[in-house]
Image (tube, rainbow, N blue to C red; front, top):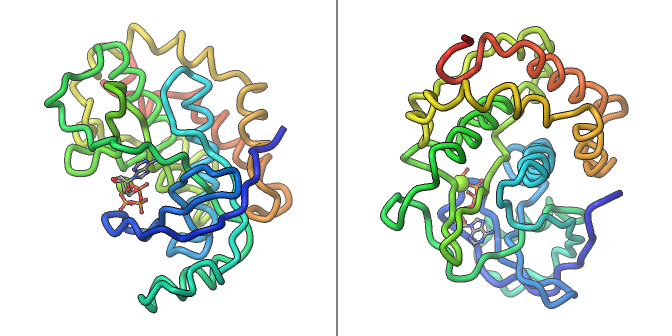
Amino acid sequence: MSLPIVTATRYVLPLREGGSLPGVVEGNDLGTYVLKFHGAGQGPKALVAEIVVGELFRRLGLRVPELKLCELDPAIGKSEPDEEIQELLVRSAGLNLAVDFLPGSFGFDGSSGVPDQQTQARILWLDAFVANVDRSWRNPNLLVWHKDLWLIDHGAALYFHHSWMSAERFTGLAYDENDHIFGRAAEAVPAIDAGLAAEITPELLTEVLALIPDEWIEAGDRERYFGHLTARLADRSAWLPGGAR
Ligand SMILES: Nc1ncnc2c1ncn2[C@@H]1O[C@H](COP(=O)(O)OP(=O)(O)OP(=O)(O)O)[C@@H](O)[C@H]1O
Ligand SMILES: [Mg+2]
């Protein structure tokens, strides 16, 4: 199994609110996508985290915009006057990550209702598991679209891979739930912990890791991700929101 592949046909505009300068593009399937570039600051590993985390969360019942791979010919940006963007496009020739664009969505701020306690606890638990630090009130990376909550921007998760810290160290890495937008749902974590952990089977992790394109990882990395995630799943004492009980 692999993610669908589209080709970018038009660079529409940069999303300047995003630190990695993602762009909106049109694809040859007439879809509109938020393109996350392999040539951006964090490199392809941020895109690996987007795929692994996004596809894991999706399979566990959370809403994540559809992910595809996108072939980019930097020539499509030739009328874009900004030099920084031109350079980013040139560096990003080849395969990038396309996130289905949700037109008319807006950033979650709680004003149109909040998810139920169990959903909040599920999001909190999963963000703690993958060490996602990008779900704060300041920067929740949650979109409201057609009244539903959608999760985006998982490129900073799994940060063990930047220096490949050991699985043991990753397992012992604490998670600060006080900085999480749904941190107060920690009290509901004990009720969901065992069930959610059991949903993350070896087969599920293997399926999700298989979606990473070979271009973005080194030989053997899939097994390393599997080892790190399996170890952190098996011993939740250091990172479980609300503390291990
Ligand atoms: N699928 C989408 N549909 C509509 N808007 C989106 C989508 N993905 C991202 N956006 C908009 O673009 C902004 C930047 O996207 P995102 O957070 O993924 O980028 P980033 O460069 O990783 O950002 P950050 O600066 O938070 O690290 C989002 O805050 C949101 O406003
Ligand atoms: Mg963001």
